[in-house]
Image (cartoon, rainbow, N blue to C red):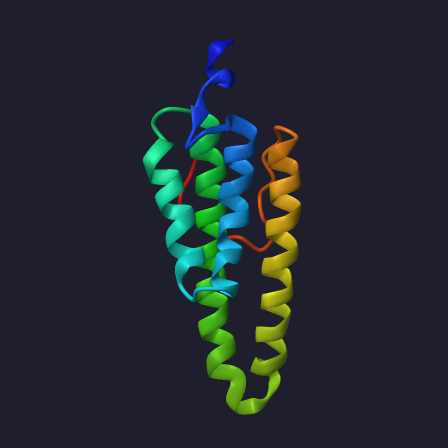
Amino acid sequence: MTENRQEYWGMPLNTYCMMIHLSQLTSIIIPGLGFILPIVMWAMNKDQNEEIDKHGKATINWLISLFIYSIVCGILVFIFIGIIGLLILALLNFVFAIVASIKANDGQLWVYPLSIQFLKW
């Protein structure tokens, strides 16, 4: 099966899928990049490989869900529980990205818990 031997941005398929998940953590360094980079990585190669399309959609679904949850928690900051919610979301985002990237490197798709399925596969 030559499809899995093809490289994407100079990386094998599993590594590229892993990087889609890990790329969302770039927001730690440059705010907003963690939302843009996974979308760019997915959009550039989604038509070339079904696995990239699935991993990209799983990541984007989580990022959109995370954005919605963050807005709700941001509103709830006024009654203090929002601060706790934002801290929990930050921790979940970090943990979920690591777990998803490990699974992707092993060739498995991991759907983020609490993720709303906006993009279907």
